[in-house]
Length: 115
Length: 109
Image 1: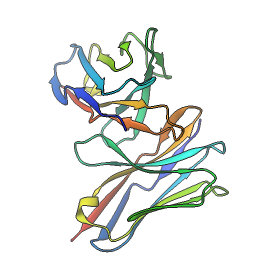
Image 2: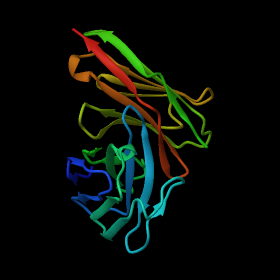
Image 3: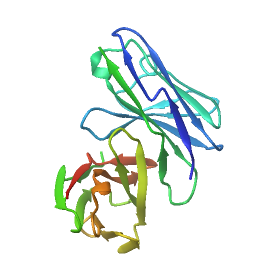
């Protein structure tokens, strides 16, 4: 398995500000992903964080709103820009270790509340 | 797009068995997964099953897969209060995991 640390674990933010979430993995992984879990909802994939190139965004998510960095194989950041109350969610970092079974391992999540 | 459906709530008494059901639409699924999310925590992988298997047992957990009906279930034997959580079914579809909305399991003493 992989151990994934996310910071911050929770934050309360003001409307219009931006927040960067960090994700650190204890081993090198090829695939890192960012998910959003809105209150009472399932997980929605925001983007795949690609090492050394621009992230690949899912439909409905754009780089200007959710810029992502992936400087190496163990670290990634997700920024939530110009936040509004609708951005209040849990944001989860996950990794695919490349095993044949294809499961994802998740961080503890970052719970953001936007006032 | 592909979809995964689950019932939203399940309530059982401590010591009983719990059965959480899931249906999916992707006929090319290779693996299906069950994740557990406790309050305020991230997702923990509980178990997975390969699509050419009918059943997988792991201690108190039994996963049944009916590929013809695209139906997956998770049975928890001797359910404990510590099993109270949200359980997500997930299907690997075209490289991404598609999650259901989650089933909230409540265990009453």
